[in-house]
Picture 1: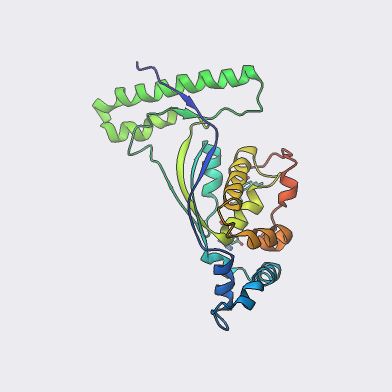
Picture 2: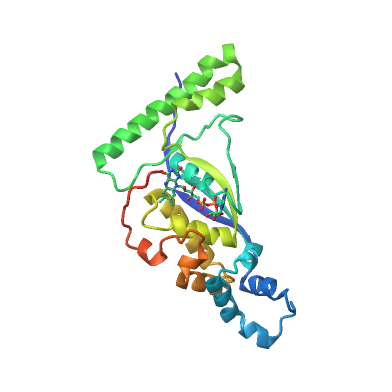
Length: 240
Ligand SMILES: Cc1cc2nc3c(=O)[nH]c(=O)nc-3n(C[C@H](O)[C@H](O)[C@H](O)COP(=O)(O)OP(=O)(O)OC[C@H]3O[C@@H](n4cnc5c(N)ncnc54)[C@H](O)[C@@H]3O)c2cc1C
């Protein structure tokens, strides 16, 4: 039986790329009159964006795209997959490859003895995972062995996901997941995403983010909780 070499990593988010800006949103809205940007019109971009968000004219924000690479536990994986509109997701496959790295997540807020127990369980189940592939392959073939051996893996196994949002769906995602009502792990991912976008060089989405934070109950169709609340890190159990 092969011993697994486990790696504990935190939830990790990287911004792979972005397209668009406040100006893209404004120009999209101005298509109804004239897309030509003059200096005088450029000065009106912050107020135009504010009006669009306040009044619920959100289609111009669909023109920008944000592209992330996320490494997360299985519960966060499921949370991300729940977002259907304006979100595109690809994830590494446990069907097509054997997950060699044995990455797993241990909650930081657990007491040490439980962290240790989960680590031991992760090591053991990862070992059984690789062993199961080895034992099933001669009879079932490597493909079936890989796709079923993963049933040994725990919910804290980490997966890497390629996630892109249009800016409108990103605002909606932030409203729901960068919220005290969301589980801490997905909230951490949402927070990291927002920080990355806020810190893009030149701050291309500065006015959109500012207005969206101001009018958040209208910026998300379901009126997600506010970002100021999320700073409190209140843990409210969700049914998800
Ligand atoms: C705190 C919390 C707890 C949760 N608990 C659970 C749980 O216990 N069980 C569970 O299964 N899920 C749970 N969820 C997931 C939740 O039900 C949604 O699936 C998830 O938040 C995605 O939201 P959404 O549908 O608004 O997003 P998207 O799928 O991205 O949709 C965006 C918006 O498009 C519109 N839309 C999308 N599809 C339709 C449609 N078919 N018809 C009409 N309008 C549509 C809606 O306005 C929607 O808000 C929870 C989410 C949160 C934040």
